[in-house]
Length: 203
Image 1: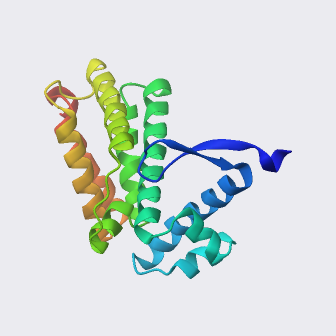
Image 2: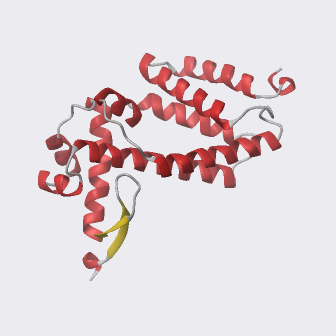
């Protein structure tokens, strides 16, 4: 029967997969989507009751999947990192090497400006979270984007991934905390991109 189908599901920290029924997996997905929206709107003090209500499930269902707020935040962080990695890989595989990296950078900053990031929520709550596997995968995907952009002559050959990640995090946090208007965000990105491009292209 369809509702008895069991699907492997990674745990919140990216560890060994555990098996969930299809209906339980759907509930888990709804809870994560609802929690991300509620935390973005209300911060880490948002209640489990609010998350359950938005997800359309009972509070007991939330606690069965995520016994603590920390486990829920870990799962959201994991899901966000996986989603970003998938988008980055798609850009690297299908996008124009000369523009895909800049499109990724711009999209990530725009998303950070639209809602509070989970990283920021975790920092506010003082909860240390390790999602090594998805973060490593994201870094590797960004490295591919940067490498292709460099091969296309769109990014300086001396630019390395650590600098790119530092710039990305810094710009995202600044955009989030100071509530940049779209025009300021565009002008700031233009300055950042000019520094990443070869001198001839930037000129």
